[in-house]
Image (cartoon, rainbow over all chains, first blue to last red; front, side):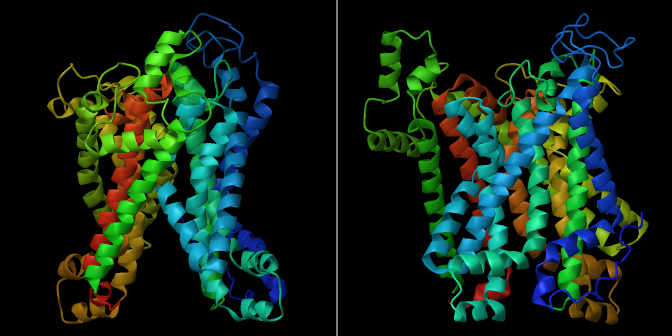
Length: 302
Length: 318
C-alpha cells in the first residue's frame, strides 16, 4: 500500500495572501483527496451512507412485520433469515442505518460547534475567562463519554434528544481544548494584532481572523468526533438506552439479537459490520485530512 | 521548583474531584421530577413513595442532601441501593474487584505490547511491515469497543471457533481471577481497543528521537543498534507516550461499561448499565463518581510522571 504519494503542495503559497488563507479548508480537502487512504475511506463512507439512505426504498419487507418463525435460517426472499422475533433481518438492516447516521451527524455538528465557540473564546480572551472555561472542561472530561451519557439517561430516561445532547456535550470540552490550542498561536500573529489596532470587534476577530486559520484542526476534529459519535450513538442503543423497540436501528438490532448469536449470527453480524465499516471509513478520511493539514502547515513555513 | 508544581497539580486534582462530585449529584438529584417517583414508577403507593423519599433524604434542601451524600461518600458509605435495599458499598465491592482485575490485566498486557509495536514500526519506518502495522492500527483505532468485542465472540465463541465462553458467568462468591477463561475475551477486547492509540504515538515519538543528535552520536560511537534503540532512544520517546497511556487508561474506566455488558462480565460496568435501567440512583452516583475519580487519578499520576521524567520541568523555576 503506497498511501503517501507525496502531493506537491509547496507550489501553493497558502499562508502568503489573506485571500488564499480564507480558502484553506478547501485546499486541505483537495490535498487530502489525493491520498489513497482518504479515497478508500470516502468510498466506504459513501457506500454505507447509500445503504442507510436508500435501504428503506429497496427493503423487501416491512421492518416490523413478522415474516417467519424466530431465528429461521436464510430462505428465498430472506437471504439473511429472520431475527429473534421473526422479522426479516435484511429489511431491518436496510431500515436501521438512518437513525445511527442522522443522530451521529447531529451530535457531531452540535458538539464541535459548541467546542469551537468555547475554544476560540478561551484562546482569544485569555485570562480569567480562559481559566474558567478550561477548568470547567477538565471537570466534564473526567467522565468517560459513555458514562456521562448513562448519567444523563439515568435521570431523564432514554430519549432521542437526550442521546444527541449527551454525545454533543461530551464532545464539546474535548473539541474546545484542541481548538484553543490551535488558536493560541494565531492570536499572537500580526494580522490579529492589526485587526485589533484598527478596532475590529471581538466577534469579527474571532470569526473573521481566528476561524479561517484553524480550519485544518477543525476538519480533523469533525472527522474524529463523527467517528466517536457513531460509536457512542450505536453503543447507547446497543445498551438499550437509545432507540427503542420496535424501531429498526443497527445498535438496537445487536442488543435484540445478541442472545441468539449461536443460531442466527446474521442479525448481529450485519449491523456490527456496517457500524465497523462506517467508523473505519470516517477514520481513514480523518487521517487523510490530518496528513494534508500537517503537510500544508509544514509546507507553508509558518 | 518542581515541588510547587507538584503541589499545585495535586490541589487541582482534588478540586476537580470535588467538582466532579457536584456534577454527579446535580445530574442525578437536582434535576426536575421526583426521584422517588422515577424509581418506583406509576404504580407507587403514597406510602412507598414517602418511605423512599425519606430514605433518599428528598425532603431536605438540595444543599443538605448533597452534604449528607458527600459525607457518606467520604466515609465509604454510598447509601442504600434503591433496587435491592442493600448497602451500595457491599453490593459493589466484589464487582469493583472484578473490574479492577480486568483493567489491570488489560493494561499490563496492552502497555508493553503497544510500546514495543510503536518502536518496531519506528525502526521499520516506511517498510512494508510498518505500513501493514500502521494500516492495522488505524483500522483498529476506529472500531467501537462493542464491535471488537462482538467480533471476537463471533470468531472465538460462536460461529468460527468454539474455544472460549461468549458470556463471562461466574459461580456466586467466586472471583474473576479464579476463572481466567472468562476473562480472556473481555481483556482481549480492551487490549485491542487501547493498543492502537499508544503504539501510534510511540511510533511518532520514537521516529523523532531516532533522528536526534544524541542517537546519531551513540551510533557513531559504535554502540550496537539494539542498545541504541532500547537503552538510549526508547526511554526518551516514552515521555509523550505517558499522556496518551493515561488517556487510554482513563478511557478504559468507561470502556469497561460496554465491554462488560457484551460479555455479561460481573464488574462495575455491567452494574452501571443495570443501575441506569433500574434508575437505581445511589448506585449510579457511586459508580459514575468512582469511574470519574479513576480518570482524574490516572491523569494526575501521568502529570506527576511527566514532571518527574522531564528534566526541564523538574528544575524549572516557577
